[in-house]
Image (tube, rainbow, N blue to C red; front, side, top):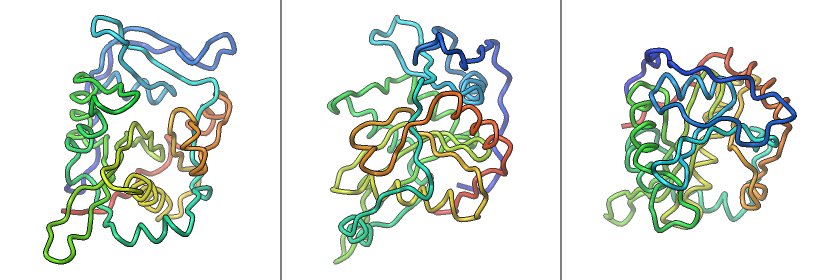
Length: 235
């Protein structure tokens, strides 16, 4: 992907309210659309979209009461994972659509990514806002490198909002996460924020913690004012 500043899309025609309300649960809004301007406006307010259970359901917009974040100095990397990482190469944005398609595999447990989500984040990728971090096999012994795992998400200023991850080979998605943490911390800018939406048992083993929504929104405001993340250029 060529080095360029993200393109700011047309403003959204929707207005999101302040989610910092103790009376609000994780689900804070319904409706709107997935145009690039709407999605960016939502993230800047601390919200993210998910489809309803049925296609005719309105879009669901969440701002969890307890937000899952991964401190950049808190990633847990056991010796076995460091050993696995030696078998992969990290690439950025070389096959964004393939990464999202793999994350959206309908055979996966808890799959939630539908065609609307895939198209929306594809549009944001082409505008320079959404990125994929990919773990590729090294292609030794004459074999061609293969996409083994990865993740994708949205970057605004110093925020990276992770959306989903997948693996085809053991530890590949974790290695992609290691690569992302290295990228976010490479320039030493303090205050960058790695958002993973919710803490799960699996993510907790990697170092993800929960913070109150009010604290997340405070950190988000700081992160949005930071210089953009410096993405390495891979081909």
